[in-house]
Amino acid sequence: MEKQVKKNSSQKTSSLNSNNYYDHSTDFDYMSKSIYWNFLQCEDAALAELNGEYRRFQDETPLLVGNYLHSFFESEESHQQFLDDHKKEIFKYGNPEKGMKKAFVDADKMINTLKDDPYFDAIYQGDKEVIVAGTIDGIKWKGKLDCLVLDRGLFLDLKTTQDLHKKYWNAQEHTYQNFAEIHGYILQMAIYQELVKQQFGKKIAPFIIAVSKQDIPDKGIYSIPQELMDDEMNKLIKKQDHIKNVIDGKEKPEACGRCAWCRSKKELTNIIPIDWLKIG
Ligand SMILES: [Zn+2]
Image (cartoon, rainbow, N blue to C red; front, top):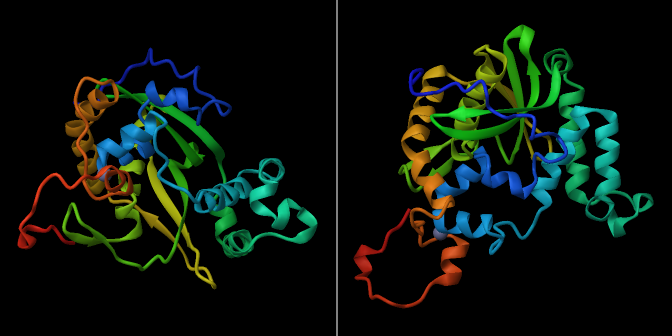
């Protein structure tokens, strides 16, 4: 894998910064884990979303809850800024005096379980929200690290999830997976590890700190076996050219036939014998 990953020291990273990192325009210049992952689920839906024809999530609350928690552990100023920017979504009737909506009361429980942990504070010390960019086998990628601790040779990523021990059915792989596998977090860590190596010249180890959305939140800190990340990187190198070509309009997207976007476009064009119906 090492050989296939090209380092490009002339890579322009100056154009990416904390103000424009999430700008939609950068999505066409840089591949990101979230966009790439969308394409792995359904190319047709991902392309429609990229082109602004479709929005996967009608309810943005889970995303906001994650960002709320991240901003808390980034800095006091970031958290205050987040509260000011999202009054309508966070507070009842958009009024801080009326109290927070339930999702954010629950988010505070998740924050507290980490904040009050005797080890968390010592572990989660480093540079926050560090933007990394580079070129993987000829394609530009970007990423954002929650917490980079370069001198200790590690980086940390905060994840919120329903239940750390929940099993998820992966219909593509025909197997049950844990929360990190089903959401592509191992792939994400592999990408970030490579981008950090290109940008800082050091191969360092990722850790996931996960906290659950349960009434009494669970938490865990997880290392990622290098061979799992190497597998993900090899799969990415095989697959990314096609996805980039789909984004650039050079190849046709494939439709999964099952997701909300595909269902909304469905027409009764062919009859399928009932025992051919795909399940699982
Ligand atoms: Zn689909």
